[in-house]
Length: 124
Image (tube, rainbow, N blue to C red; front, side, top):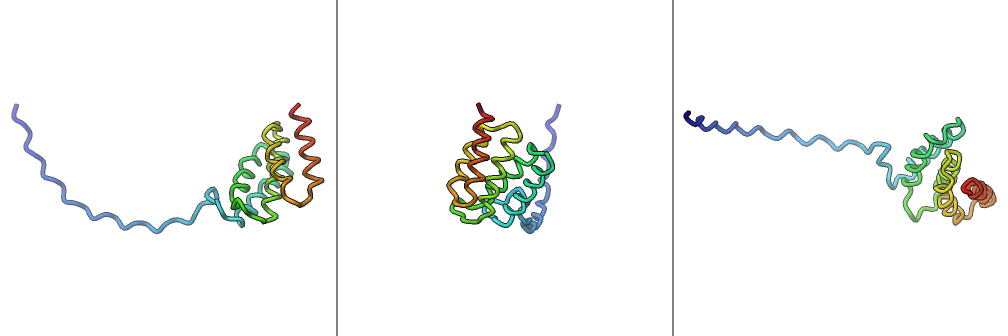
């Protein structure tokens, strides 16, 4: 059999113009305290609705939305709510370090200590 004739290269098509960058999705809220506050509110609503398992990933994202050196009170609330959600979801061992980190923030520490005591008791 004869070899097939070489195919002619297809003419190069112009590259499509680069699409405009899309705005960051909610899940990319790293370093966006406003997004963290919104996510914290969503997570708290899930806890209040008796759905702590669903609140955990929302609140983890909320905590990660704040820069490490933040003094934003919503960061403190997000840490507390994450610890609370983890405990209520049956994950007290994960709640303890979150609540211990929350205790480092001088705001409503007595409430945090109570939640931490509950998590430690549940972890026994």
